[in-house]
Image (cartoon, rainbow, N blue to C red; front, side, top):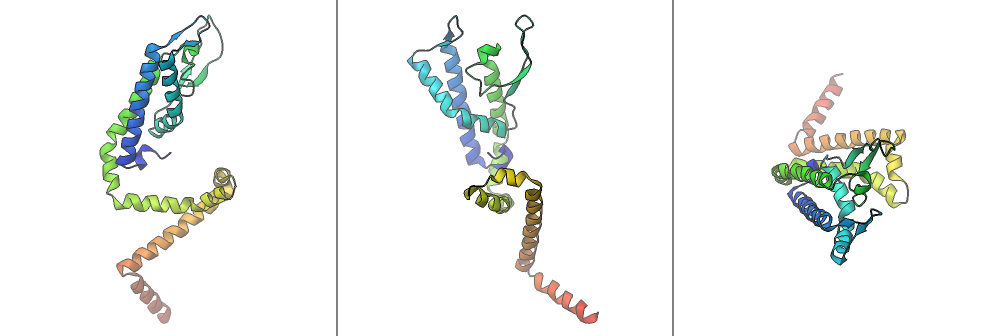
Length: 208
């Protein structure tokens, strides 16, 4: 999922709406949930429906929060009386097990609020990006750069592994240089400078 700095206002609004919906679901779920002596949740039909809706949104929200640059992880240190080892806990992936780590749901709500703040603060910039031609040119350029690896993925290869390899990085660098060279020549031709450069080169060759 693209970073919040690389989306326009339509996607910004969509992500904000998803986060707000998820926040309401989480708040309602934990407000009405109690636990038995085995620390298992006691749910009625509405609680089960809320849990189902949270699960449906979980993957999208995980991507959206991370795309805002907000961490979904909290460092858990077990009480000395209980013992155990210090570990990083993903608040979203463990949202229904937070009580086992003695983590309160307010941590999840805080994380969502931080992410919402990032998207809300960037909304004006997302509108500017939508009308900025250079933003779209850059998007097209990045799509062309990714195209060979997308074709490999469609053919069944592990494109991420290939792209991350040394050979993949070298190919990507050379490919980007080639695309940049083609873009510069195209721009010069559109601006009418390409013929002038060719004539100057021919003149220099005839002199020497």
